[in-house]
Image (cartoon, rainbow, N blue to C red; front, side, top):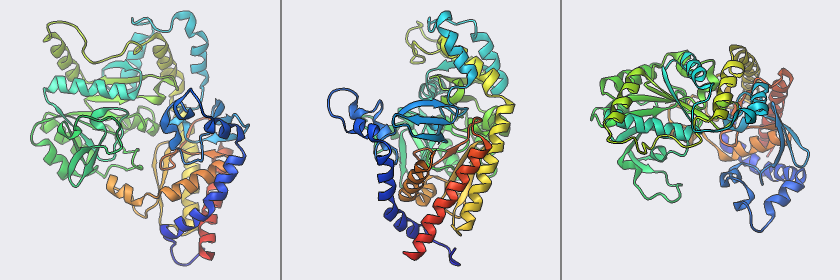
Length: 462
């Protein structure tokens, strides 16, 4: 190891030199997937179910044959340990047995009827006990749940605007797809088909900026603040000490509702970040892993918000279309999977196992970074980890973007994949399932250390 710190620019130069060999190795091992990616003709657009599947830092997508626990096998016979877990959709492993049991029997009890099933009351009680809010509704995705919760916030407060934090992502919710540019809020430049200026109804401010928050709320125009407890979509950004207390106090002072999106931070522990840190939101959303991988989401309300929703509904002349809910939301299948997940999958024992495995990985990553003298650090939220390419924790999206390196991310991602470990495609986040064995956690750490040494030691010689 060099006696002087290695900067990111030097590592990027070395990674660029190493990437062609890693790409070639990946491609050589996947001739069937490559042929599928290159095939022309009618069918799926770009030969993938969703076009963003091409955004992974790999030459072409892996095509998965089987997923079980943390094991993925692709159509070319390559086996990898999954630490992406469908970007949280399979946070508790692929196909937990209680969920598989539901799926084996669900068809005999009915899949969807547009009426409550016998599990409905029990699921409601489980959600209230687990997450604190007394009233709940079911959606298909977190995108849906966030849309519905925002609509309720506007109906209850009579206000048009919402506030989000720069760098956020809350699913395919138009109101949240914004960027903060020179202090002004604009529709995200990457959006397709956007015809409405989202800056008219959405305010974006930096995370952890109490002054900006105070200034944005003082006008009394904001219906709700929509926030992840820890930002996870622009790199992992932890809240500054006291920030959540200030957020809750200011929203209450200005009659603004607080909507917490726990879709990613459910990794924190039993009850999510909200329960473990006592955030007291007015509304809460969770999607992805809450049903064990089946498309389902939940959104909860305080008693006061529920009463406001009742008043708003009664004020209408007819029941009509409220803009809240879809036909397949609240289906018998979703309710059965939610019940199984809450009762048998998302347990204190499950979280204890996840924490133990994450402890191994966190310690190993810190040791590997230190061994190379890198000015990096590890950020963690429960069973979710990220290596940030800066010496100090980032406080907002601007600092996260400054610290990021797409080149190093691609190098780490592809190198680890070629050694049998799949990380998330964005920021190389590591998600730790209860199905991950201790030996697999240790093997990941060893591979990470070997790759960092290759990047840094070879960089010195270059």
